[in-house]
Amino acid sequence: MSGRGRSRWAGGLAVGAIACAALPIVASQARGETLESALMQAYQNNPTLNSQRASVRATDESVPQALSGYRPRITITASGGEQSLSSTSKVVTVSTPLNSPATYFTQSGYNAPYGAGVTTTQTLFNGFQTANKTRQAEAQVLAARATLRVTEQTVLLSAVTAYMNLLRDSAILDLQRRNVEVLQEQLRQVRDRFNVGEVTRTDVAQSESRLAAGRSQVLSAESNYKASGAIYRQVIGINPGKLTPGTPVDRFSPRNLPEAVGFASATHPAVTTAQYNVDVAQLQVKVAEGALYPTLSVQGNFQKNYMGVGNLNVIESYNASVLGQLSVPIYQGGAEYSAIRQSKETLGQKRLDFDTARDQVRQVVVQSWGQLDAAKANIDATTSQVQAAEIALNGVREEARVGQRTTLDVLNAQQELVNARVALVTAQRDRVVASYTLLSAVGRLAPEVLGLHVPVYDAQVHYEQVRDSWAGVRTPDGR
Image (cartoon, rainbow, N blue to C red):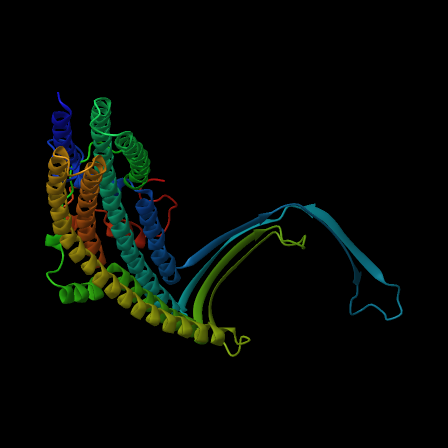
């Protein structure tokens, strides 16, 4: 094969190899792991998400703790032991003369006193503190559930990003490897032409330099691919398999920016969390104010003793009583007034946090909308860039064939095509991630919206299991 024929064949190989390298992210594959399956794995296995679910279950327990204020408190006491007593007393009678010698009586002995009792206390009124604490605990549960939704969105978006990053880096690695193959063939052809005197040593050196740079790019691509694989394993919980292309989810997002901002400001879980935190703080004010109210309780007590403690003459005794107790606070050092002022300041802070949350959500929606628009436009721009780079490479190769271009021109045109392909692969990744980012920004990145075939975690189930529990140390899952 002549030098010119080899040059033409190498140019064709460059176009075909680079085109094939982009296939993993733009073309469908018959079998392999999908983005949806990766999201399902992350939803079930991600430790951060499971940790937040455990936190919600722990928060559920604050409701039965608050409800315990309505219930009686029962205490059983028991005592027993050995005692030794000795007492001496002066015997004085009415008939004893004043100047007569004193008479003393000594009593001593051993016995084993024991007894048992039960005390029951029921609070009837405590300044509505129990009712307000219960409502506050319920608001805390709702806030924890909203926080869980935020965590779900964060984890799912991280899973999408990890999946698409690995898919992108896999395509770029394949592209760079194929580019090295083309550069190796290019160097072989240049050396053949150098041997027959068609090119100079400079052309050979330029080809060798470009091949070394290509190998360096392969090493960088391999490093990026391994790093993305590690992140994939961390977020999704399994080692990556053969990934299939991801698709955008624009169909689940609002149709225009004003609608997206309005929807997010009203329903985003971060905003909902801030709103429930305001409710919690407001109820804390009422709880603190309850310390200024009287407290009314009823206490029942029964005590049975045998062999009286400190008395050798008592064989058996019992004590039973039902007493009401009213406590009216007058002044307790001022701590309760400070607690009320403090809770009011906290309430003001939470209201400001609520405003901040809405502003942040709005900013993220506007930013995500702009990123999605840019990603869509970037797809068209990079596609045109690839097409133009392919035409330019073919033209430079033909001009080089007739001596109007140098080997360096061909190498530069080929590198521009590789860069264009990398840019297209990156733009395709950004397009998918941006669509999921916008869905998260409006608060709709959830398995129900995406239609994932996975059991959706229902926090209400555990709440109902523990809300009215009066006793027991086992959790509903048996631990």
